[in-house]
Image 1 (tube, rainbow, N blue to C red):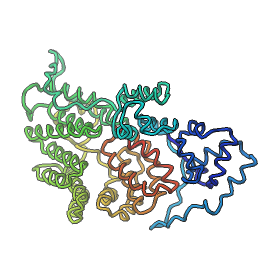
Image 2 (tube, rainbow, N blue to C red):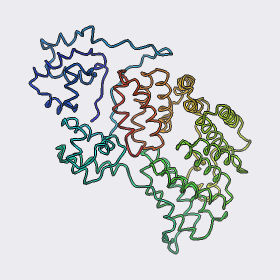
Image 3 (cartoon, one colour):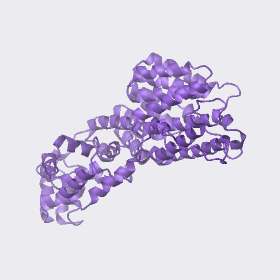
Image 4 (tube, rainbow, N blue to C red):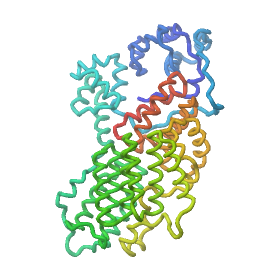
Length: 522
């Protein structure tokens, strides 16, 4: 259960602890009864009433709603004693923005671990007590609640009975299993002997053209509904295309191989975004091997770029930089691939805190943006020439390797800002984000990654209201995007915000942010 805090809650002063107990008793409720009603544990509410814990705005709201509005005992609640006034907050390093508080968005998802914790606290049970009932250790039960370990169906049934959830926990567990989605298939699916196309079917060029059209649709769906939504169809597409080429090695004249490279690359990206790093690496390496055999410079260059990105996400800055340089050394790569190479090298140097290397790679990236080669456009691809003119008459050209060009992003300094977060230059990064994010008028799912980085930079320089406002607007997109590579940035943001838990905006955001970051498909 997610508890949202609205503006009125933040502006309502905290009542003295004795007033909280009086309101509960006047409503005829015991501590246990209020715990069941509110979702807070009995021990926590007792400490709040005894003055050992400061009441949060959400707790104040629960108590003030126990008596009818306008009751006679409301006046003491509105007159806080001098001792209950919060300590003054030190001013931020830059001028604060006045951002209106917003009600929490409907994230459309409740996670099994979060619901187990809520029900356990409502029942007044400790981790030890509940663990003894379901024959589970305290640390492992805590990991399940935090989303760092997965339950199984039998454990879900046991927890459902122990917490008297009446089947809701079991249903939630099954829904979460379905939501996490299928496991990305590994490269061994190519050795299963797929069925060959029947006699009389369309020739390979037409089949390749149709597969290219489907690939475009899958790319669009992955951005709209998350990578989990296309895993199965991508695997089927790779098997189908591999069946067309049979056991013959890659051939430059075969129209199927260039399309198959695209399917395999997207399958590797999907495996990474769904949390299967080892599978993602094997597909990326397979694409690189096929590209070398085909002599496709752009496919090989982009496979090395993807490998560099994989290493950077795992924190291996040295390997990431070396792979980016290998990609740049591939002869004949296009202008667009050279841009990706410069980007990945800059990101790897920033992660390694190599500012000089970062600046050199960033300057090269800007130079490539400013001077594209004559006659080269970013809309052409190797697939376009491979599948023949029959495909051109029925569809638009496929996007090139990697994300589609985004001129608004490229003309801003947002890429530099994301790297400065890794370099720990948070003040400059926050300033660049301030100017650049307002220019992103057309919403794209990739912008949620920028929002998380902007929130990290703002939180580090003390702009907590701005950080929470940015993240609150991006949470609905992040929650449905299902990106495992975003999970590291979300956890970094949570660590920073946890240092300022007393700030009202942080208290309002953390429950939702933590719930999204706990998701196993992030």
